[in-house]
Amino acid sequence: MDDNDNKLFEQAQSSVFRAISTDEEASVDFRKGNSLTPSLSGNNLSIPQVSTNLSEAQIAAIRGMVDSAALQSLYHNKEIHHKYTPTTQNNSQKIFSAAEKARVEAIGSIKMDGVAKNIDSKIIYDFLNNDYETLQEGKPPPIDIAVYLLTLQSLTGRELPQITTTLMEKWGNIIKVKSKASLKKLQKNINNQEDFAKNIIELIKNLKLSEHGDLEEEDNDTSNNESEEEPSPSESKEEDRSEPKQETSFEESFIEEDKSPKQDETSQSKVKPSDKGIEVQTNANYPDFDSSTKPLYKIYTNQFDQIIAAENLYDDEELTYLRKQLDMKLEKLKKLNRRAANNFLRKLLSQHSKSWDFNLEYGIIDSRKLPALIADPNYLEYCKQEKESENNNTIVTLLLDNSGSMRGRPITVAAMSAEILAQTLEACDIKVEILGFTTVEWKGGKTRQKWQDSGSPKNPGRLNDLRHIIYKSADAPWRKARKNLGVMLKEGILKENIDGEAILWAFKRLSIRPEKRRILMVISDGAPVDDSTISSNSVSYLDNHLRDVIHAIEKKSNIELIAIGIGHDVNRYYSHAATIKDVDELENTMFEQLTDIFEHRASA
Image (cartoon, rainbow, N blue to C red; front, side):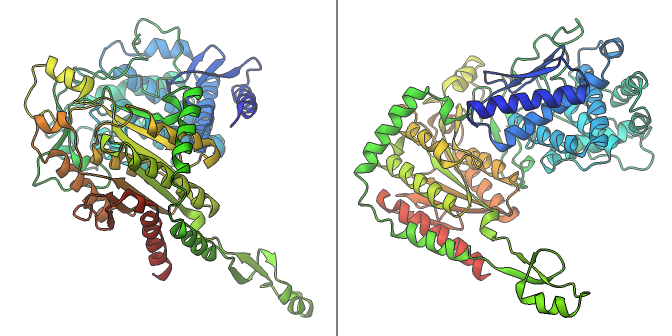
């Protein structure tokens, strides 16, 4: 959206806020910054404006934030909340606020279907930005969010978004076992905040949180398990962590800024990972991994990792300069063969030709059926309906290796190929996303320094600061993302490559897309290389993880994974891959691979 669209959207959200909260003075404004946490002060809601070009997912999430805040303004009593808020310093306060937030959102969701959908969008967006859907990034499992989701589901009877599955499998059954009776009472008191608060306190007591806020495993505890089975030890026990989580959960995000002394004043701070290595079980990711015969892949800390839109790396003047540099380089590459791209476009457009379903009772009137309708007024099958093209329900993600070895002609050709791909697919109404992966620093950066300051423990796991770059999101039109590709030419942007986690990141983004068909294409010029990680673990550490990730996606997901290796044999990793000796072959090979995969589906 442009500035005018943003202003109109802001005004519209203010109107929604006033309508739901019944407060004529209420307002919504956007603020600059990178924080994803909205804040409610009095009757003013401040919403983060992460980008001026808001995606469809961000717009839907903001609608959910506005609805949630308005419902809190209408149904939430601050005095009652402060009266019953637990005084203990473990996760009790967070769980209490989370359940109360679920209560007010449930009331609105029951009354208005649109609110329910917006709340779901907010949940999905928050899960993506906090990596809650995998529980493998080193963060303590958020028990308060599990309670929020379980309470919301219990009160509304609605299915939770699919992205919450991993978290609910981890905590949902345990919470049900320990607090089944309390959950039933919450349903009865949804419209009575005081009685509801008392039920939450009872629920928290039944959870029996440890000193650090984790759920404690209890053997042979069936006091609250009337008909359900006991959870397995693997489901009910978490490894100890040296520091409790200090990040404010999204359930607490609208608690008023004038907090009582009971509440955590560091709610805006980031997670402080343990100084010890953080074990990451690959079988905790979606899709399932088989790690029974291999050591666990570990991340020492993700504190310094970045997921960033390319336009946020540099100011507009620098982006314009870099794009001009890319255009100058592309002028020299005009002689590269475009035949494969043109063939691909023609084949897709031919598949896009209209087809119809006939003899329907509803749809567009079929002129050929008018005589039958005139002869028999009771004749019903006189309509037709255009079939939806499968291509309209497809998304392609292009994941580019942004390692130092791609510097020069390889990265220029890769940028050009990504540009042609985006333009070609957009012409066929196919969504395309362009992502890149590298590291923030050479030789480990701040992660390695943190490890050294902690005494350099053995086998620390991944030991560098990741940088994952979004050059073009799936919902952004190409004209708005065009300038971003010049970032690849910025001196110093290309460093190390940790492929396994990058592919998981791209896979994760694809897995929550609504399109029926999802294709992930990886372009790389070598095996995973990060000197800091390899020098402190086994030489094949990153290589083994990459193989595990590829195997899991290929065997246990419906996302189609293909790869192109530039001077590097990727066939030993991927089932569907091509290797090119010269980077100038990239464009043709890329479209040949896509043509094969589309033709294979068409003939299947």
